[in-house]
Picture 1: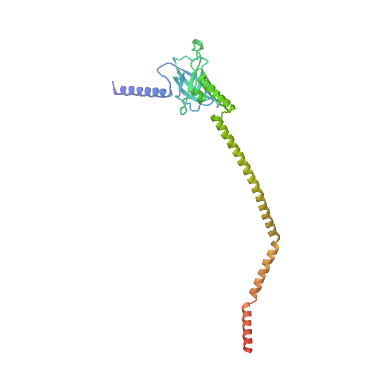
Picture 2: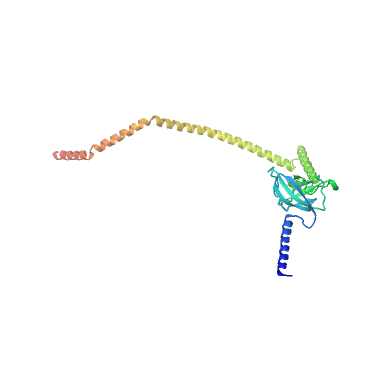
Length: 261
């Protein structure tokens, strides 16, 4: 075999391997028969291409594409394939469930009886979509109802025990502590209210006194200005009086009087 033929064969094998790997990552089945279905959802958070499609927990396919409905942007088209060994009734529902607290989401196909012939969904058919919360995803419908019943019975028994006056009941202790806390809060609120009222009265008196002082200063402003003006005049007169020469003359007069005497 020539070198060119070998290179061509290896190229073909490489391309086929890449295509097969891409399809495998997307969850598409190439070597076996499969059906493609579409479901519509309003929210596809944590749902991704290659997310598993399950029937009673068994993986039977994978999501291959997620697109926005061009005629309604609030709807998302989710396309997925299912192993051809599973015939789905037309009444099948595709429920989006959580894989766990930190996991993503997957599609669970739920239906009643096994279909035959024309009762089975055809390739490319749209299947009704829905979603279920985290608790509903982790528990079956019967188990969830059982747990709800148990919780309801427990709460009812606890309330009945409280009505019977059993003080050692944890709920009774909690409620009594809560009542004491609320009473303390009510007393504290009343004390704070009285303190605020007294402080408000004193503050009003202080503000009134400050207002009175300010008013008096405003009334006496003219007198204060007059006093300051007089002081300024006296200072000017004293400056212009040449007190040094006057003092010298008085000193000479005293000396002359002393000489005469």
